[in-house]
Length: 269
Image 1 (cartoon, rainbow, N blue to C red):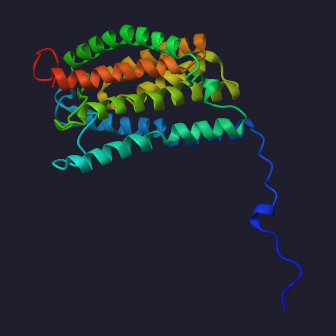
Image 2 (image 1 turned 45 degrees about the vertical axis):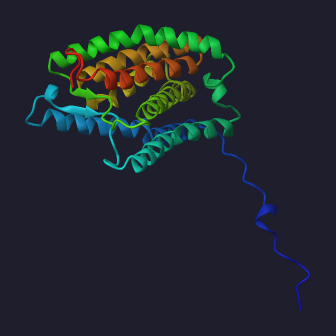
Image 3 (image 1 turned 180 degrees about the vertical axis):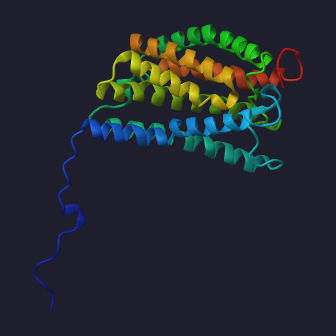
């Protein structure tokens, strides 16, 4: 004999009201996002830098590999791992997008959209041209002074997908860094009541810290780049041109190394 009443299904149960975004919740959220992304990278880079400093060899004779093979001698498996790594590295950006949506906002609030494509690309090219060359000179000077490791932007095998993967890697780096360490971080610090100078310094120091694995030159150069990017973001309120500039800078560095390494005397290899 069946009962005349039935228990409510899970779809009939009321959802809990969203929690109010208090300073404590915002702070916890920020720490979790950083722990899953660039904050963890910063700690990893610090450990790597300490290892390099305490190694018997001098810094300039050690190497920092950026894009290496993940399955040597097996190009298709290597390609699969490369694409997997690029895709999973973008997950924190999707998390930030989700968190912004839950507060009634979106990535558009950070200026990461396609509404001003031509303007963003124009600004991105100008930033890349201004910063790219000075960044290279700083690296070469730091390497000559013995305070920077030899940065190897690519040690991928000479296969058909090498250049496309390097471009995708450059774009992934740019999107993750600019969305999280500029747009999202500065937004949350502002909501937490931080002053603009303190927030800018925090963003720039975080950017420098996760490049410490490259040595002192990588740290200083990226702190300076971080300060410039924060000032531009404050002026434009858009992450998109910064991400475009960063993509161009890294693409030139990655692909340029492939084309020039071993062919010019001034480039450390």
